[in-house]
Length: 69
Image (tube, rainbow, N blue to C red; front, side):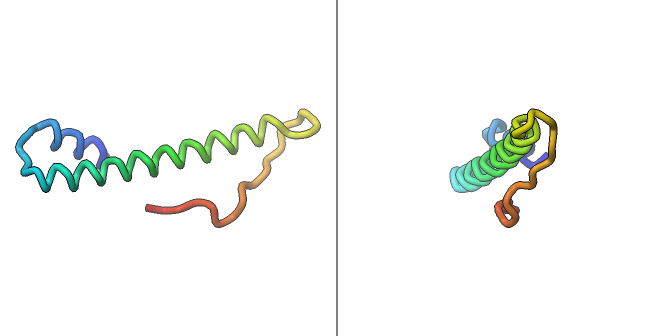
């Protein structure tokens, strides 16, 4: 996993400052991307559980709201 490699590289202490900053920024971006995916998954679960009749029904999320990084 890319985030694990970034963490390992940063923890090694062998990188130049500029390399460390670039990897740190990439890591933050990956964390935000993953958090967004988790939030969307949680929203889907909540939509399935909270249907009006108390029955489970699939409700699609708005199309075009997912962003790929």
